[in-house]
Image (tube, rainbow, N blue to C red; front, side):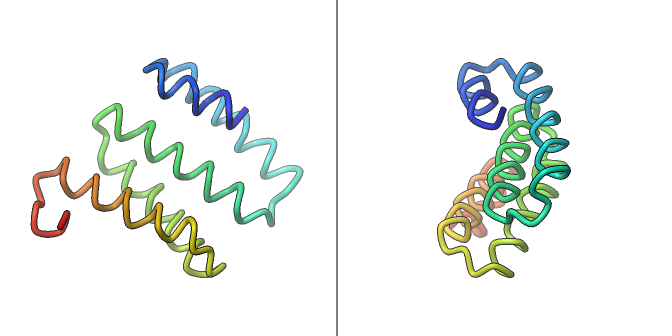
Length: 100
């Protein structure tokens, strides 16, 4: 579900992507509740989804969840994604000093 949702987000098919992300979240919660990597990926995509909807509050919520998990797990790949996502969000909100 996650990979297909990512493709749909790139194609601007946001609502279809969102439905798949919700299915992925339910499946992940049921089958692999301790898989930090997959949750970080899921929360990143949900953040992107909300960012494309210009719902920056929810986007920030999911990016922050991903960042907290990446910090806890010392997941350097997602820590880099965390910085990139937060920078992009700051830029889109017009907070240019934070985006630098």
